[in-house]
Image (cartoon, rainbow, N blue to C red; front, side, top):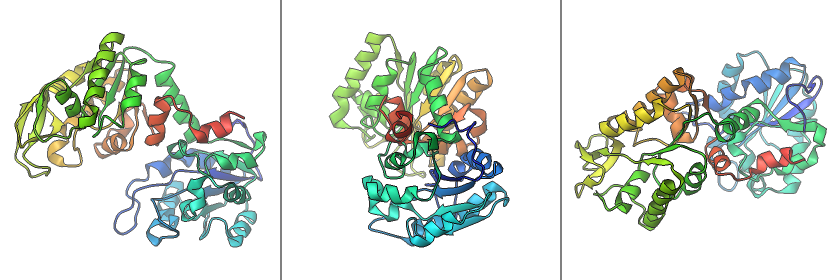
Length: 400
């Protein structure tokens, strides 16, 4: 595996797997360029050395072949803006056509070629070896800088590494930074360590809760998943989201936390609504005494105060998942308050890592992205890394 910082890219074509799966609006304009901006350091490092770059990514979930709305052509203006118009960007309208191979072969130092959406070919997600081998023709050296897809054993993220020698493949700055920051939380923890978990379902967080019970001093539970815990403890939660088949799981997690001496803090109160709408009638109720016909959509002020106190006395902070339906303005106060608390703790010297699509969206939306230590570009990948799973995109290179 090459050392990215010390490798000489001059005169080389670097085939880079990036994660440009970014949100587009109805006019097919990029609405959040975080993942594109994250790769700027990697791209500039190669281009300034006199290398050329071939970028490959997926976008969305096309079904059965090319779909215009998922063309990576739409991200070119955002990519050009991030690069400051300094480098020429070419586009290949098919990632493995002979024309595309001719384009990549003809690249000159400082030039960039963006390949069309990899998922226009079903072979990408199937991890097809022949497809991976074709993609490998685009580069002299392979760089995986797509942490957000590292948990997928796809052709461009894992299989392709087989077609490059050990001294011609490695990780880019994004991937390296993601791994280093995740390891700082997991392996080089400054205590107290608080993990903040939110989101809709307990089922999606079981493994990370179990892993964090081995690592964290305090775990804060918010969002829709908290009502499964509340009902498991015998509370009344009205029409709040509950996973009935996970009540025993929730009870087991509470007992496990007690056995391991981990403080598992659950919401005390909730902002509740009479229907799932920003314009719904709202009031506050105890988390275990929500009336029939009402649902919890955000944490309340007592919970905010309790969670904030725990966050402010922590030295390491992991946040994955919002505290409520923050997309609705009337139910975003809890998530915003947690973001503010993390920013305040970071300003006092704590190390904070925010990961997971909704958490990242929240810190970006509320303007806290530059007030936390690190914002991960990976959602599912970060979750699986913290669960202790081996990520195929990392193993394909690091295990060599």
